[in-house]
Amino acid sequence: MSMRNIQGASIDELVQEYEQAAVAYGQALAAANHRAANRAHDRIASAYRELRSRSVASYLLPLLKSVDENVRSIAAAHALEFAPAQGEPVLLEFAARPGRIRTRAEYALKAWREGTLKFP
Image 1 (tube, helix red, strand yellow):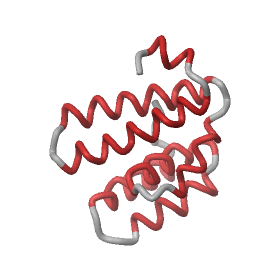
Image 2 (image 1 turned 60 degrees about the vertical axis):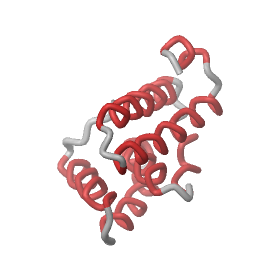
Image 3 (image 1 turned 30 degrees about the horizontal axis):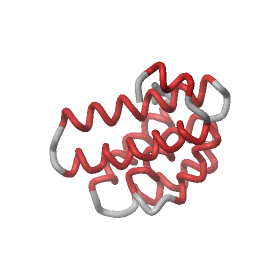
Image 4 (image 1 turned 120 degrees about the horizontal axis):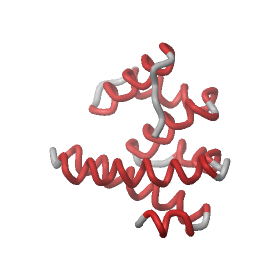
């Protein structure tokens, strides 16, 4: 979705773009494809910025229950900015078990607690 399309997208379209990009990000990381991961990250950030600019980032909260771990973890990290009571438990769950997402969850929680977590 281009920047022009992002700005004209509905809230549902933005959430869908965010979710699809989060899935693509996880797939790219698993394939060690850093270029695809960077592109997917940019899509996530663009959708998040637009949702936040409209004061509707809370529309991402249903993604905390996604079956896709990447979607859940990314949404949880962003939720630390606007709904920490809902995002933190999801990240704590990931941080407590082995797996690729563990390190990302631990980093997000550590940076958030230190006040250094930056949102796009």
